[in-house]
Image (cartoon, rainbow, N blue to C red; front, side, top):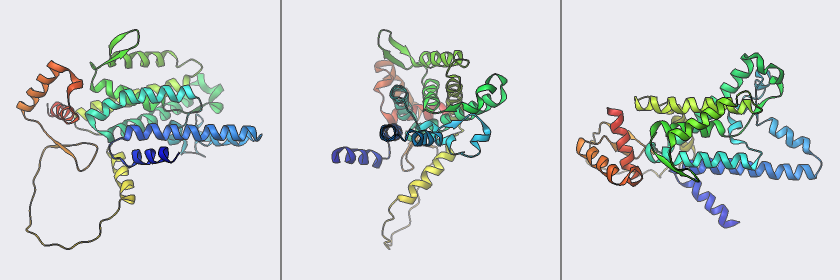
Amino acid sequence: MNNILRDLKNEFAKSENSLVKIILINSAIFLILLLAKIVLTFSQSRGIYDAILDQLFLPASTNSFLYKPWTLFTNFFVHVDIFHILFNMLFLYWFGRLVDEYLGSKRVIALYLLGGLAGGILFMVIYNLIPYFKPVLEVSVLHGASAAAFSVAVGASTLLPNYTFNLIFLGPVRIKFIALFYIILSLAEVVGSNAGGNIAHLGGALIGYLFIKLLQNGTDLGKPIYAVMNAWSGLFRKRPSMQVTYREKQVYRSSNVFATSSSSTTIEVPNQTEIDMILDKISKSGYESLTKEEKQKLFKASQQK
């Protein structure tokens, strides 16, 4: 047990593994709720467990939402079914590692959070505006990371539409077709038994597409999230002891840099020679052969164009 806790602590201490942190947070919440369900059910206090979930699930009704607005955030970290969390976390990992490789760790977080929020907002808007859902408005709730995972998946597919996954029984399939299949499936199920969840999927997919398209044009929707992240990390960062030194003043000038997931790491805009070398490497060995820095340089070059 001590080894497991130490490993988890080490993972959270790393600055470049946001995808793993998101998966660990979702898994930890699932296990805590699972244990609570078992204990409270055995002690004949199942009502307490239901009351806990009621404070975490996002209600469709705006009247209920006003009394628990935090559920707009908590709902996409909560799962109560093992297959639900298993599929969502696998989906998130497969596509999230591509976003991490090409755009950096912080943009995985931005896509996840913005997708979850967009899915929840669209869920509430549709249920309150369309009369079809009025009979179930007061009892409908939303939970699970599906919308957030869809945001990451569609974001990755918009960024790298021709990247291929090797699927069992199907072989290599371009990820744009995988994303399109799940979008069509969700659209077909908006009048099914899980209409709310599928509506949220579409909200997450939309924000994933817009996030990448705007980023390619120089607008980063994640900036407010990065500011909060930096402020939060600053609260726990150890301040170095004050030292007084005297040295010759030096001025460093830099321009046209592309910030990755850490403020201390920058990627310069590549020149044409570097771009040609990267493209040659892709033609010979494929995207997978590129280093993380080369991938981010290629993306930066596409922004300049």
